[in-house]
Image (cartoon, rainbow, N blue to C red):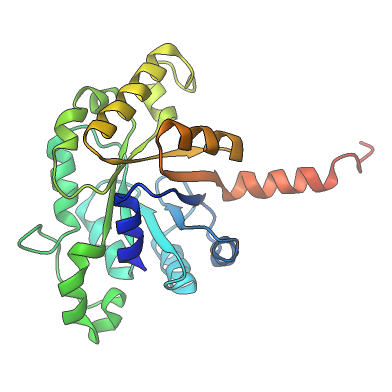
Length: 251
C-alpha cells in the first residue's frame, strides 16, 4: 500500500485526503470507509500526541496511507513516527535546501540517508526486520511543506534535493511570512503561489495543498495540484452539525 501511494504521488495522480487533528481513531476509520486516499495526521497544530498517532495507525492498518506532519523538524520525531509504521512524513516550515537534504536523510537508511535502525512496530517488532530494511527507502514518502517567503526565494535549490516526493504549499503561513497573515488572495501571496506551481511543474515535482471544500479542491486540481487535503475533522464535523440543525432552533 505504501509503495502504491508513493508511486501514485510521484505519477501526479489525484490523491484526496483530509486533515485529522482530534485524538480519535474512530474518525480515521470513518475517513477510510469514506474512500480517502490518504490521511494527514497533524501533530504540529492538532491535539495529536505520539500515543494518539500510534492508535490511529494501528486502527487503520494498511487500509490507506497515513502521512504524519511532525510537530517540529527534529530527527527524533522522524524516526519515532516512521518506526510506528507511518507511510510517510510531512516536515513543516522548510526554508532552505540544506534543511530539505537533512530532513530527507532522516527518512532513508544508509547509504541513502542516516535513519536509525530500531526494532519497532514498522517491522512487526523485528519479525520482518530484513524485509523492511530492504524496502523502506523505496516506500517511505517524504513531503516538505513550503510556507515561508524564504522557501519561495530558494525554491529552485530545494527542488534539486534528491529524495523529495512532493512539496506541500501552506498558503496561510506563507501569507504571514510576507507580513499579511490570512490574506491568501493578496497579490504578493498569489504571485508566490504561482511561482511555486511553475517551479514544481518545471521540476516535475508533485505538489499538494490544503483546501476547505470540494469547489476549491476542483480548482486546485485544474491549477496543477494533485495531493489534496480537503478540510479537517473538527470543521467538517461542526459543518455537518450546523447543516443538520439549520432552521430547527428558535433561539
